[in-house]
Image (tube, rainbow, N blue to C red; front, side, top):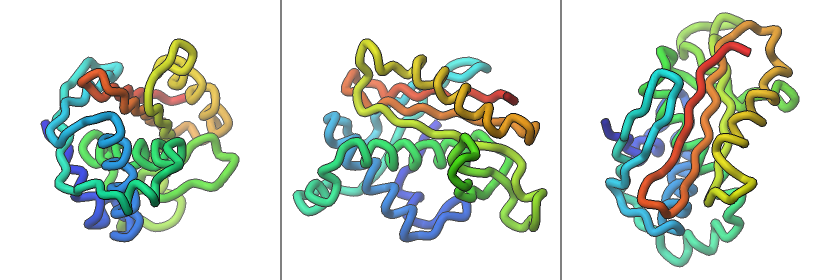
Length: 182
């Protein structure tokens, strides 16, 4: 299976084209910083099993883009968002994302673009990114922290997708997607 990051700039999942392009740039700067080329394999670890996805893009990182993204922590946050939204596009039955408010314990609502009102918000999506795993900052530790964090909105009873993307230079992108109701 292939994730085409270039489609972010087309406004997928209800995003504006401008925000999608912003996320695409963040993705390419993080991937470039780890010496990944288009076609890099991404290991998707899920409760249902593992998948290997190919991550493709055509954007080129130049010096101007590097200067715009010199804060790699921020770039990693937005790059993880771009990858998570691409994964939601193929892994969720819902076709639209909406930014959630601060304090909800998650980042985005997933729902149907043409639905209105409360029923549009059908699932929760929490996202985190790690540029390079360390002994203390691991994907597993981050997933566990995000599970605790999403308990704030537990009363919704809605499924939550937790997506942690690690961009390290091990030859694989490590991404863990956890689907659960907490």
